[in-house]
Amino acid sequence: MNKKVLVPVLAAAMAAAIMPVSSVMAEDELIKVGFAQVGHESDWRTASTKSCQDVFSEENGYDLSFVDCDNDEAAQKEAVRSFIEQDVDYIIIDPIIATGWDTVLTECDEAGIPVIVIDRTIDDSDKYAAWVGSNFKTEGLAAGEWLKAYADAQGIEEINALVISGTTGASAQIGRSDGFNEVAEKYGWNVIDEQTGDFTEAGGQEVMENYCKSYEGQFNVVVCQNDNEAFGAMTAMDNAGVTYGPGNDVILISFDACTAGLEDVKAGKITADFECNPLAAPFVEEVIQTLAAGEEPESEVYMVEHWYALADQIVDFEIDGEAQEMTEVTDEVIEAQY
Ligand code: GYE
Image (cartoon, rainbow, N blue to C red):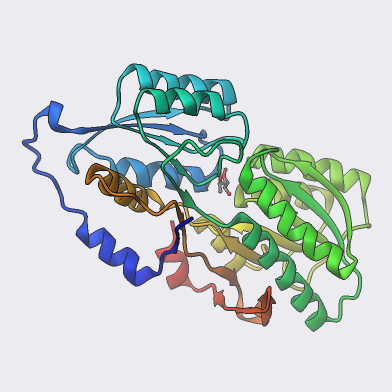
């Protein structure tokens, strides 16, 4: 398998190479793209949708059919089938969950429509041209190894963690859980519970309310698998009188590092935030252009991501022997985020 890791310089060069197509282009000359998006559950998702709508615009030569599948697996398959009926040129899928895809992908294949998978992975079929997204297990490992280094630096000997996971069966959930649990096992931490908040603020709040009741005084780490869950968890902890963030009762870990998440890092609420970069659409366009030219695209393209904290929470750590760099959250960093 060809693998490619994008570096920012290459990304900028690729963005510059995307030529705007004349706005006088006739409608039938536009490239028809269908995008079956997960839903609208988070800030991350909003940024992902905007990235796709910006790239696959009419101005850029595309006719985009966008379907918000509202986190409904059946609706997502239906959306893909409607794209086959519309005879689009390319289908983009952000799979809500990682399995159950082979039948519908076979239908795309038989219709001769190439599929590009974006963000979450499909784990039970290889009938797609390429995937562009993030290494979720690496994100989970980073959160775990950072926690180890930070707890050591603070003299915290015991880790009692509660996890609020993402949508069960989504590859983003599976990878982040696997990564964090692997580290937890290695250091003998106590992971008290893991329940899903479905990547939403309301879900995060509900799970944390239950945790505060069931495990009062028993936990010192809360891991939320996205920023929106962390926002909900903070409301629940505020209501229960649990303090969080640097120097407080609970070390609060989050993923995504969207603007609002980084603002909470800056405010000393989220202790560390592990980025998942939603701006993948330019790289999906690169895949489409490669396919349109009759060439074979890279089969896997990984987004570049950063690990964020305030200066006092930045510690040295490694993943599989590789030293990791952390980025200090400043106003400029927040300003540049999505
Ligand atoms: O972390 C979360 C979103 O699939 C990586 O989905 C994505 C996740 C992201 O709802 O905020």
